[in-house]
Length: 587
Image (cartoon, helix red, strand yellow):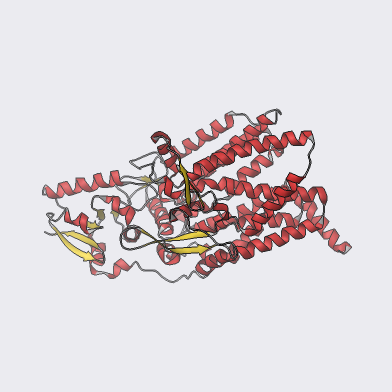
């Protein structure tokens, strides 16, 4: 290497000693990766048409639900709690339950008068997720050694992780994996802060997790508790007060209350935790079962599987719903983990080092066991085979079912293991300064990218070429709906409205139609069950109709023929439309 190259590398290393510079270096890696994968059309804030029919993209209506939830929240009057959305459900519902990224929804609602009539922030949010994931990913490596290649590799490993790729523009709020890395960095960089400031930062990070997606709250709090435990086991002066986790949790609950998370008759708990769990061999399983919404019952249909690896064949899990616990790490990262493990088990350490390492090992191990216990749920599977079932008490089952899709709680373990591998190779390089290690890291990074390239190519093919052509709701092409847009003010899904959760196609299509025409609804496809309030509203309306108190401003929707059969006596003109039935008052 020439003197000039050595000089440039030395200057880069000196720059990377400044955490802010390292962070910006990682942000750049993340932003460039996002632009290469998804292009720029998704960033256009007035390009909303692709969001209105997201089923045409990956076969799911979730993204449409998130966008329409933002539109409804934007159109709702200000109330307290400040996160309440009106017009799409019988009772106001929190923007939390439309998964519309409450932090962004709240900010852009404040400046709504300055925004164009059609506006979306989901592309911007995903771009920020990639940038921040890259930034915190680079900081993880730079905490122990300052080298541009190591920081670059660390950032790129994280921004191309398969679990992040899976979530982008599918469950957008769940793309905020940077929150997990931020928690790890806050633990690793604690020496840079006073104990009081670090405590405030933990509280702030927990609140930030709450206003993005509550799934991240237990993840952040988990790392916080691990840090407190490690300091105690190391028998050093406690920098962080054990009261900080309590304060952070309280701040999260208070934030949720302000957003309306606990208001109304929304079902918090869920069922079937066993089906949406993590398989113990999930880190090696490259198979992602592809789920699509279909127009006929039942709601979902698995239509094959995506392969996230060019080398490792995936295996079928006990139930395809376990794809929610998808956690393939990639062949390159698996190689890095193996190398680091072998090296450190073969190395000798001083007594002081051993004591400190033991404190980290015990606290991290307890965190790994805890999160894995939550992620696998009551039915423990490995390689698609049931090992045993844990008879959880009903109270614990319902408490943990608040997070419903428990398989996602493996993410702290997933990113924790990746972090340990990156820290390990960084420390090895710091001790040896052997350039062959940089070659090894570069080779494993290339192997990783080539291995997971099918998933990256799949996302690129879908989103990098998003058009900006106009979109017209297909319902307006039908006479019954175009007429209703002139004189109807309400869409009523007739009880039992639990069917709305089974028909997201009709829910989002009709929600889009209602919002476009200034109509209100009694039910919508949300992340939690709203049947109680929707049914009560529908039943009360039907009772008035049967008592001779009709209204001609309501469009009645019967989602199944079985539901319609219960209401044949009503004075309604019934018109079949595809596989649902539309009712209007017959005078």
